[in-house]
Length: 338
Image (tube, rainbow, N blue to C red):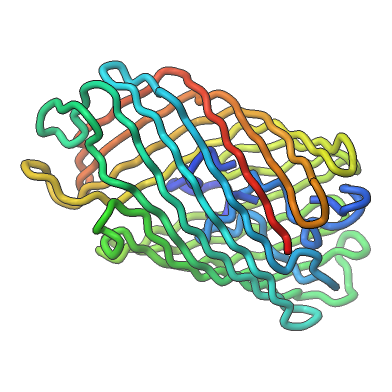
């Protein structure tokens, strides 16, 4: 809905993404996050380092597949109700290069179906009924690397690690036939720090669209804090999440965050060129993750859409802007670790 946190484009709205984004198999609090992934509510968008990889002695989940499906039913925009169904698939492969360096490859592909019921005027060409949008897609690839800067020397606490983090990515969000026009690419660079209690990454990201328009420069930041063996506090894009480990196999969480997704649209007769759809949501939810066994996890999240705005823009001109009343959302995730 990006590395974390301070990105104007937001995280993936494949859905209340909350991809994003922690515990051992016997005791969820016993080992560092890099050896066992965090709750899948953390974004794994190729443009992010929301869950930065740090060089470790070993990696418990070298390959991870995440299947996700989100549903936002009947958002009330006044004259029209809009439902969103958004399935998504993500792949993450971690490759140790040495004791001090690691490479992580990520891929993502997803689909969004908007169902309009009522009268809308998305493109400023007059009211219409039915679905004004063709199928919408999103995909991305990234390569994230990390290099540990210190070996044994510590500056604050014993066992701490300082790392240089870098990410290169390409991604697209597009209406049918507009893949090349929706393509963008860029890279991020950050410094990371971790010890037994906290993990932080701070840096900067550059991104440019294939159609031009200059380079976007955004600060990026991510933080994870484990105040107790059972509690984890982390940012979630532009927002936050608190996790509590009920048992070694069950975790629960509450979260509040902003989710946003933009799509490049095809030209419409009578409308301006270079059309873009933006769907921005403010979400508050709760959920749980069940670690079924070593290889499978099930994650369910639901909550309230506190605010939702649907816009169509052409360059810097807003053709339409609709705000919805409060609604609900539900997201189901299945995580596979071969």
